Image (cartoon, rainbow, N blue to C red; front, side, top):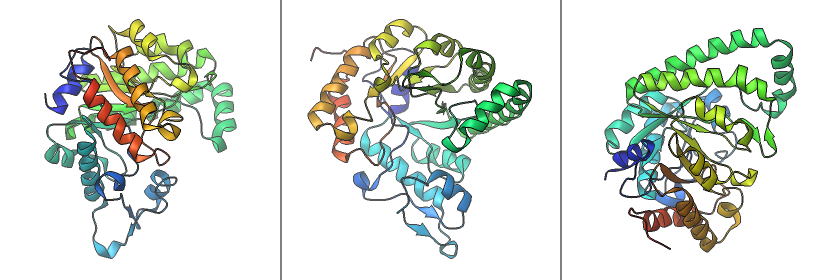
Amino acid sequence: MQPRERAICALELEEPDRVPMFELEFQYPEAVIGKKFVVSQEQDDWTKKVFQDFLKEAPITKQQQRFDVTEYNTLVLAETCMKMGYDVIRVTFVPDQIKAIRLLKKVAPDYLIAGSAGGTLGIPEGKNMASTVQYVFTKPAEFKRQMDAMIKASVENIKEQADAGVELVFDCTDYCLKEGPFYPLWVYRDLIFPYLKKLVDAAHSKGVFFVKHTDGNIWPIINDLVATGIDALHSVDPSAGMRLAEVKQRFCDKIAVCGNVDAATTMAYGTPLQVVEEAKQCIRDAAPGGGFFLTTSNCIYKGVPPTNAIILSETGQKYGRYPLKNF
Protein backbone atom coordinates (compact mmCIF):
# COMPACT_ATOMS: atom_id res chain seq x y z
CA MET A 1 0.00 0.00 0.00
CA GLN A 2 0.99 3.60 -0.50
CA PRO A 3 1.20 5.71 2.69
CA ARG A 4 -2.02 7.59 1.94
CA GLU A 5 -3.95 4.37 1.35
CA ARG A 6 -2.51 2.88 4.54
CA ALA A 7 -3.56 5.85 6.66
CA ILE A 8 -7.06 6.04 5.21
CA CYS A 9 -7.52 2.33 5.77
CA ALA A 10 -6.71 2.76 9.46
CA LEU A 11 -8.97 5.81 9.77
CA GLU A 12 -11.77 3.70 8.33
CA LEU A 13 -11.12 1.18 11.15
CA GLU A 14 -9.70 -1.49 8.89
CA GLU A 15 -6.41 -3.38 8.71
CA PRO A 16 -3.93 -2.04 6.13
CA ASP A 17 -0.74 -3.85 5.14
CA ARG A 18 1.01 -2.47 8.22
CA VAL A 19 0.34 -0.12 11.10
CA PRO A 20 0.62 3.46 9.80
CA MET A 21 2.71 6.05 11.62
CA PHE A 22 3.02 9.82 11.99
CA GLU A 23 4.12 12.48 14.45
CA LEU A 24 2.38 15.77 15.14
CA GLU A 25 5.74 17.51 14.94
CA PHE A 26 9.32 16.56 14.16
CA GLN A 27 11.37 19.39 15.60
CA TYR A 28 14.91 18.52 14.49
CA PRO A 29 15.00 17.43 10.84
CA GLU A 30 18.74 18.11 10.80
CA ALA A 31 19.24 14.86 12.73
CA VAL A 32 17.58 12.90 9.93
CA ILE A 33 18.26 14.73 6.68
CA GLY A 34 20.91 17.28 7.66
CA LYS A 35 18.65 20.31 7.10
CA LYS A 36 17.13 22.67 9.66
CA PHE A 37 13.87 24.53 9.60
CA VAL A 38 14.46 28.25 9.08
CA VAL A 39 12.87 31.42 10.42
CA SER A 40 12.05 34.43 8.29
CA GLN A 41 13.30 37.71 9.73
CA GLU A 42 10.40 39.74 8.39
CA GLN A 43 7.76 37.49 9.94
CA ASP A 44 8.13 38.63 13.52
CA ASP A 45 4.67 37.72 14.85
CA TRP A 46 4.74 34.28 13.27
CA THR A 47 8.28 33.68 14.50
CA LYS A 48 7.42 34.58 18.08
CA LYS A 49 4.33 32.42 18.09
CA VAL A 50 5.58 29.27 16.41
CA PHE A 51 9.30 29.20 17.02
CA GLN A 52 9.48 30.67 20.51
CA ASP A 53 10.66 27.47 22.18
CA PHE A 54 12.62 25.01 20.11
CA LEU A 55 13.83 27.02 17.13
CA LYS A 56 15.60 29.82 18.97
CA GLU A 57 18.84 28.89 17.22
CA ALA A 58 17.34 28.28 13.78
CA PRO A 59 18.94 30.04 10.83
CA ILE A 60 17.33 33.43 10.21
CA THR A 61 16.92 34.57 6.64
CA LYS A 62 16.88 38.21 5.59
CA GLN A 63 14.22 39.76 3.43
CA GLN A 64 16.67 40.74 0.71
CA GLN A 65 17.60 37.10 0.22
CA ARG A 66 14.14 36.50 -1.29
CA PHE A 67 14.03 33.20 0.54
CA ASP A 68 10.68 31.40 0.51
CA VAL A 69 10.37 30.06 4.06
CA THR A 70 7.10 28.25 3.41
CA GLU A 71 8.52 26.39 0.44
CA TYR A 72 11.81 25.55 2.13
CA ASN A 73 10.32 24.35 5.43
CA THR A 74 7.64 22.36 3.63
CA LEU A 75 10.22 20.52 1.54
CA VAL A 76 12.31 19.85 4.66
CA LEU A 77 9.21 18.51 6.42
CA ALA A 78 8.26 16.26 3.52
CA GLU A 79 11.75 14.84 3.17
CA THR A 80 11.94 14.18 6.91
CA CYS A 81 8.59 12.40 7.10
CA MET A 82 9.45 10.26 4.08
CA LYS A 83 12.82 9.33 5.56
CA MET A 84 11.17 8.41 8.87
CA GLY A 85 8.61 6.15 7.20
CA TYR A 86 5.58 8.21 8.22
CA ASP A 87 2.31 7.92 6.34
CA VAL A 88 0.79 11.28 7.28
CA ILE A 89 2.48 14.65 6.77
CA ARG A 90 1.03 17.41 8.94
CA VAL A 91 1.75 20.97 7.84
CA THR A 92 3.83 22.72 10.50
CA PHE A 93 6.28 25.60 10.92
CA VAL A 94 5.23 27.61 7.88
CA PRO A 95 3.82 31.14 7.59
CA ASP A 96 1.52 30.22 4.69
CA GLN A 97 -0.45 27.09 5.50
CA ILE A 98 -2.46 26.94 2.30
CA LYS A 99 0.60 27.34 0.10
CA ALA A 100 2.31 24.55 2.06
CA ILE A 101 -0.67 22.24 1.58
CA ARG A 102 -0.69 22.79 -2.17
CA LEU A 103 3.04 22.19 -2.36
CA LEU A 104 2.79 18.96 -0.37
CA LYS A 105 0.11 17.68 -2.72
CA LYS A 106 2.63 18.08 -5.54
CA VAL A 107 5.78 16.75 -3.88
CA ALA A 108 4.15 14.05 -1.73
CA PRO A 109 1.11 12.83 -3.68
CA ASP A 110 1.23 9.37 -2.14
CA TYR A 111 0.98 10.67 1.44
CA LEU A 112 -2.02 11.76 3.48
CA ILE A 113 -1.67 15.52 3.90
CA ALA A 114 -2.97 16.93 7.18
CA GLY A 115 -3.80 20.40 8.39
CA SER A 116 -4.96 21.84 11.68
CA ALA A 117 -8.22 22.99 13.21
CA GLY A 118 -8.54 25.25 16.20
CA GLY A 119 -11.05 27.30 18.07
CA THR A 120 -12.36 25.27 20.99
CA LEU A 121 -11.70 26.17 24.61
CA GLY A 122 -8.73 24.36 26.11
CA ILE A 123 -6.40 24.75 29.05
CA PRO A 124 -5.33 28.42 29.01
CA GLU A 125 -1.72 29.48 28.93
CA GLY A 126 -0.27 30.27 32.32
CA LYS A 127 -0.39 34.06 32.02
CA ASN A 128 -4.02 33.97 30.81
CA MET A 129 -5.28 31.13 32.99
CA ALA A 130 -6.98 33.11 35.76
CA SER A 131 -8.60 35.67 33.47
CA THR A 132 -9.86 33.03 31.04
CA VAL A 133 -11.40 30.89 33.77
CA GLN A 134 -13.02 33.95 35.36
CA TYR A 135 -14.46 34.96 31.99
CA VAL A 136 -15.92 31.51 31.32
CA PHE A 137 -17.56 31.31 34.75
CA THR A 138 -18.82 34.88 35.13
CA LYS A 139 -19.85 35.71 31.57
CA PRO A 140 -20.85 32.43 29.87
CA ALA A 141 -23.29 34.09 27.46
CA GLU A 142 -20.67 36.59 26.30
CA PHE A 143 -18.14 33.80 26.05
CA LYS A 144 -20.51 31.82 23.84
CA ARG A 145 -20.87 34.76 21.48
CA GLN A 146 -17.11 35.02 21.22
CA MET A 147 -16.84 31.28 20.60
CA ASP A 148 -19.47 31.47 17.87
CA ALA A 149 -17.30 33.94 15.97
CA MET A 150 -14.13 31.93 16.51
CA ILE A 151 -15.73 28.69 15.38
CA LYS A 152 -17.19 30.35 12.30
CA ALA A 153 -13.68 31.43 11.30
CA SER A 154 -12.27 27.98 12.07
CA VAL A 155 -14.95 26.29 9.97
CA GLU A 156 -14.06 28.49 7.00
CA ASN A 157 -10.37 27.72 7.52
CA ILE A 158 -11.05 23.98 7.51
CA LYS A 159 -12.94 24.33 4.25
CA GLU A 160 -10.12 26.38 2.74
CA GLN A 161 -7.60 23.72 3.74
CA ALA A 162 -9.81 21.02 2.25
CA ASP A 163 -10.07 22.90 -1.03
CA ALA A 164 -6.26 23.14 -1.08
CA GLY A 165 -5.91 19.37 -0.71
CA VAL A 166 -5.99 18.43 2.97
CA GLU A 167 -7.70 15.11 3.74
CA LEU A 168 -7.21 15.17 7.51
CA VAL A 169 -7.19 17.86 10.18
CA PHE A 170 -5.88 17.72 13.73
CA ASP A 171 -7.28 19.69 16.64
CA CYS A 172 -4.47 19.88 19.21
CA THR A 173 -6.25 21.75 21.99
CA ASP A 174 -5.52 20.12 25.35
CA TYR A 175 -8.58 19.53 27.52
CA CYS A 176 -7.24 17.78 30.60
CA LEU A 177 -4.43 17.63 33.12
CA LYS A 178 -2.83 14.45 34.41
CA GLU A 179 -5.27 14.54 37.32
CA GLY A 180 -8.33 14.89 35.12
CA PRO A 181 -10.44 17.55 33.39
CA PHE A 182 -9.30 21.15 33.85
CA TYR A 183 -12.87 22.48 33.89
CA PRO A 184 -16.06 21.24 35.57
CA LEU A 185 -17.84 18.72 33.39
CA TRP A 186 -20.63 21.16 32.52
CA VAL A 187 -18.10 23.38 30.72
CA TYR A 188 -17.19 20.52 28.39
CA ARG A 189 -20.84 19.67 27.85
CA ASP A 190 -22.04 23.23 27.21
CA LEU A 191 -19.04 25.26 26.07
CA ILE A 192 -16.57 22.89 24.43
CA PHE A 193 -18.04 19.81 22.81
CA PRO A 194 -20.88 21.55 20.91
CA TYR A 195 -18.23 23.70 19.21
CA LEU A 196 -15.91 20.77 18.63
CA LYS A 197 -18.77 18.98 16.89
CA LYS A 198 -19.18 21.96 14.55
CA LEU A 199 -15.54 21.62 13.53
CA VAL A 200 -15.89 17.87 13.06
CA ASP A 201 -19.04 18.34 10.98
CA ALA A 202 -17.33 20.98 8.85
CA ALA A 203 -14.44 18.62 8.12
CA HIS A 204 -16.77 15.75 7.30
CA SER A 205 -18.83 17.96 4.98
CA LYS A 206 -15.69 18.32 2.86
CA GLY A 207 -14.77 14.63 3.05
CA VAL A 208 -11.97 15.33 5.54
CA PHE A 209 -11.08 13.14 8.52
CA PHE A 210 -10.83 14.73 11.99
CA VAL A 211 -8.34 13.65 14.66
CA LYS A 212 -8.52 15.03 18.19
CA HIS A 213 -5.35 15.35 20.23
CA THR A 214 -5.45 16.02 23.93
CA ASP A 215 -3.06 15.26 26.73
CA GLY A 216 -4.19 14.35 30.22
CA ASN A 217 -6.61 12.01 31.95
CA ILE A 218 -9.69 12.18 29.73
CA TRP A 219 -11.59 9.22 31.19
CA PRO A 220 -14.31 11.46 32.72
CA ILE A 221 -15.05 13.12 29.35
CA ILE A 222 -14.11 10.46 26.81
CA ASN A 223 -17.66 9.28 26.05
CA ASP A 224 -18.83 12.79 25.22
CA LEU A 225 -15.62 13.45 23.27
CA VAL A 226 -16.12 10.39 21.07
CA ALA A 227 -19.78 11.33 20.59
CA THR A 228 -18.74 14.50 18.74
CA GLY A 229 -17.93 12.27 15.77
CA ILE A 230 -14.14 12.48 15.75
CA ASP A 231 -12.48 9.87 13.55
CA ALA A 232 -9.46 9.23 15.76
CA LEU A 233 -8.01 10.05 19.17
CA HIS A 234 -4.41 11.05 19.84
CA SER A 235 -2.47 10.53 22.14
CA VAL A 236 -4.08 8.41 24.88
CA ASP A 237 -1.66 9.90 27.42
CA PRO A 238 0.09 7.10 29.36
CA SER A 239 1.56 9.53 31.89
CA ALA A 240 -1.99 10.43 32.93
CA GLY A 241 -3.19 6.87 33.42
CA MET A 242 -4.77 6.45 29.99
CA ARG A 243 -4.52 2.88 28.75
CA LEU A 244 -4.34 2.24 25.04
CA ALA A 245 -5.76 -1.28 25.29
CA GLU A 246 -8.81 -0.11 27.21
CA VAL A 247 -9.55 2.78 24.86
CA LYS A 248 -9.24 0.43 21.88
CA GLN A 249 -11.51 -2.15 23.51
CA ARG A 250 -14.21 0.37 24.41
CA PHE A 251 -14.26 2.40 21.19
CA CYS A 252 -12.85 0.15 18.45
CA ASP A 253 -16.09 0.43 16.45
CA LYS A 254 -16.18 4.23 16.64
CA ILE A 255 -12.68 5.72 16.42
CA ALA A 256 -9.13 4.91 15.45
CA VAL A 257 -6.55 5.31 18.20
CA CYS A 258 -3.11 6.89 17.88
CA GLY A 259 -0.32 6.38 20.37
CA ASN A 260 1.12 6.00 22.74
CA VAL A 261 4.83 5.45 23.43
CA ASP A 262 5.46 7.77 26.37
CA ALA A 263 7.04 10.94 24.99
CA ALA A 264 7.84 12.37 28.41
CA THR A 265 9.76 9.39 29.77
CA THR A 266 10.49 6.49 27.42
CA MET A 267 11.18 8.57 24.33
CA ALA A 268 13.16 11.22 26.19
CA TYR A 269 15.10 9.15 28.73
CA GLY A 270 14.63 5.49 27.82
CA THR A 271 17.09 3.24 26.07
CA PRO A 272 16.45 2.16 22.47
CA LEU A 273 15.48 -1.28 23.81
CA GLN A 274 12.89 0.28 26.11
CA VAL A 275 11.44 2.20 23.16
CA VAL A 276 11.23 -1.03 21.17
CA GLU A 277 9.47 -2.90 23.96
CA GLU A 278 6.95 -0.14 24.63
CA ALA A 279 6.21 0.21 20.92
CA LYS A 280 5.69 -3.53 20.60
CA GLN A 281 3.26 -3.41 23.53
CA CYS A 282 1.32 -0.61 21.84
CA ILE A 283 1.03 -2.76 18.73
CA ARG A 284 -0.17 -5.71 20.79
CA ASP A 285 -2.71 -3.54 22.60
CA ALA A 286 -4.25 -1.65 19.72
CA ALA A 287 -3.24 -2.94 16.29
CA PRO A 288 -5.44 -6.08 16.09
CA GLY A 289 -8.43 -5.39 13.88
CA GLY A 290 -6.96 -2.20 12.43
CA GLY A 291 -7.84 1.37 13.32
CA PHE A 292 -4.46 2.08 14.90
CA PHE A 293 -1.55 4.47 14.32
CA LEU A 294 1.75 3.97 16.11
CA THR A 295 2.95 7.33 17.45
CA THR A 296 4.47 8.86 20.54
CA SER A 297 2.16 10.30 23.17
CA ASN A 298 3.00 13.81 21.99
CA CYS A 299 5.59 14.54 19.28
CA ILE A 300 9.27 14.28 18.43
CA TYR A 301 10.51 17.31 20.32
CA LYS A 302 14.03 18.56 20.97
CA GLY A 303 14.42 16.49 24.14
CA VAL A 304 13.96 13.16 22.33
CA PRO A 305 17.25 11.56 21.24
CA PRO A 306 17.27 11.00 17.47
CA THR A 307 18.15 7.34 18.04
CA ASN A 308 14.89 6.80 19.91
CA ALA A 309 12.83 8.51 17.22
CA ILE A 310 14.40 6.36 14.53
CA ILE A 311 14.10 3.12 16.50
CA LEU A 312 10.39 3.78 17.08
CA SER A 313 9.82 4.06 13.34
CA GLU A 314 11.88 0.95 12.64
CA THR A 315 9.93 -1.00 15.25
CA GLY A 316 6.63 -0.05 13.67
CA GLN A 317 7.82 -1.14 10.25
CA LYS A 318 9.17 -4.43 11.59
CA TYR A 319 6.44 -5.54 13.98
CA GLY A 320 3.40 -3.68 12.67
CA ARG A 321 2.82 -5.73 9.53
CA TYR A 322 -0.52 -7.45 9.04
CA PRO A 323 -1.35 -10.19 9.63
CA LEU A 324 0.20 -9.55 13.03
CA LYS A 325 2.52 -12.14 14.47
CA ASN A 326 3.21 -13.08 18.07
CA PHE A 327 6.28 -11.34 19.44
